[in-house]
Length: 315
Image (tube, rainbow, N blue to C red; front, side, top):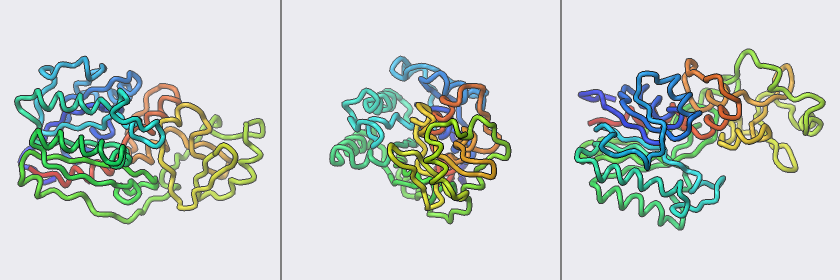
């Protein structure tokens, strides 16, 4: 990112800081963040201790209390538009949180020069495309010229995870808009073995007393594949990619992808899930339950994809 100045960033719906981490890696300066989930804030604060983080509902925060910035980013809640959710869109209060972003942009006398939004790919086709048309129309009314594209983490982030997300990058300045291009596809050089931890606790392994053990033992035979337990069968992902990590990994152990190593059949650890999201090795996982960590990994973004997009932003 060849900027004349370091860009200051405000992050809405910041989660554990995946977008912030990617922008920071690209040379941007995060100055303020908001997240409603207390456990996510613990992880965010552990890794970004010097950033002003507000743990509150965005609807409770006055625009006047949000600092001016160059870049406003928001991975606004996606369950309302996701295949994994009910796809209610704007009829769901989570979908309506997009209008909280609009409210802030409308009320800012000094608007951010750039907006950086992320969501599930189904946002593009939800309600026959009407939802996305509304989003683009409202942002255009505020003066933003938009680029958008669906990127898969395995193609653009060099992580072995099949994860398609839509990114919307908006500019007030036409020159900055014209200068921006999404990054090109890169070769995937990392495999499942590259995200594995060296030392694994016994609690992650299945034993003969475990539910599904006989079915798992019969089907999980390849150390280079990732497996999933479905309702009636065990599925092997033969592409050497992990399927999309989801927040419901935190609601039950059977939702966590499985692998075979020299010791036996086991779940991916929370740290391995964070590795699949492109977080740096030094990223701190606080002492909270695995359920929360799995949920956070599934809810996050792929950091390396964010970084590559951000490096193409110039003003």
